[in-house]
Amino acid sequence: MSDGVFGPGGSDFPLASWAARALGAVADGVVIGIPTYLIALGLDVRGRSGYFYLDLIVSFVYSFSLVGFLGHTLGMSLMRLQAVEAREGRTPIGVLRAAIRSATAGLLTIIPLGAIIDLLWPLWDPRNQTIHDKAAGTIVLRREARTLPPDQL
Image (cartoon, rainbow, N blue to C red; front, side, top):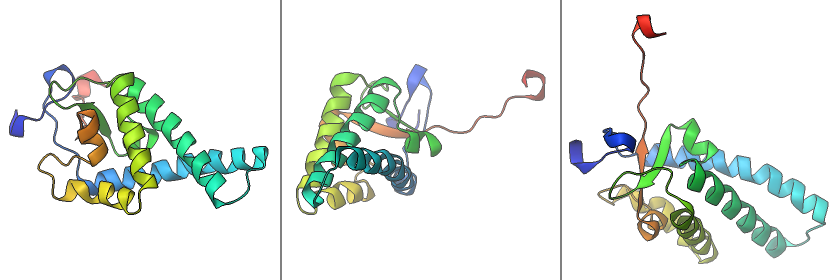
């Protein structure tokens, strides 16, 4: 295994790049934004702070449930990324790690510049971890596209 990075079943996968993670986060922002807007309309949420807290709740539920039970969000899946337990490579990471990961990301959003620092952290981190990855004990790996031999198609 290279760089001590491994994935499910002992497979060797590279760490996810910052660019792939950022693009996945943008895709997740769109996925989260649409239902948040519709819920806000339905509940008649007014004001910037009301919408902000609704967005935090929707983001938490989305990230917690998908990463906790599947190991990835829709944006991560689009970019072929997988959140795994940092020491043993288990995925899905489970409800406790997913709750810590999602709650930390949400709390960092509330702190001025917190979300930006969290987003940029993988640029200088040796394991490309965000602060919310470190808090939950997770890393994000890039699942390589695999092609099957013609006789197995």
